[in-house]
Length: 247
Ligand SMILES: [Mg+2]
Ligand SMILES: [Zn+2]
Image 1 (cartoon, protein in one colour):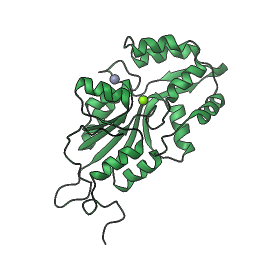
Image 2 (cartoon, protein in one colour; image 1 turned 30 degrees about the vertical axis):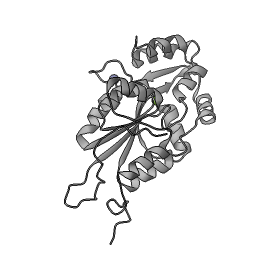
Image 3 (cartoon, rainbow, N blue to C red; image 1 turned 90 degrees about the vertical axis):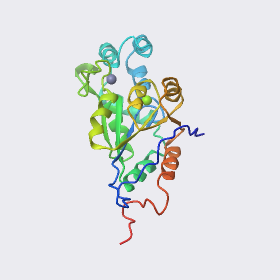
């Protein structure tokens, strides 16, 4: 069920003109628990990094950032690429409405990017499984000899210093290219980027955190809810999908 509590002004479709310059819109999505309905990162570490729970508890309690947590988990991790891919493809649950949401955005010339403090190996595998070509930003898992791995953090932010991939810094970085940013997420790591977005769609944990810190957000279940909500901002006759303009 959607709880509309946000009083943001309506979004103007890019190219819908009427003399106004088209608005450049970006949708930024979290991956674990958002694009993928299950938290693949957690399932994955639970399966392959024995003893990670203790480290996860320190992370969830805010005692360490995700970059330190990953660095501590790396020595515990044992698996090769094919074991990892086999597990991921069996356990993943893509939000069933995500592919349709992606094409909705593309038709309306709304850019969509995924930002994740999870790992490239499963994000890439899941997107490829569904034939979805989406730009994503995440940490990297590097397979080494003897089923060992390393994690790499190419998107670490010096300002933040806590996250492996700092979603907030990415959002700030995207900001210069867009007029409005819509953020979609589910949990703790989305609290900080949500505060920097113009509109937020949140699952229960994030929604509650947003209410506490005064960030307006809309509760949602799946990408079908979000599409229906955005469609209201694109009423017929005002906004026509790309390729359907009158010739
Ligand atoms: Mg998440
Ligand atoms: Zn950060």
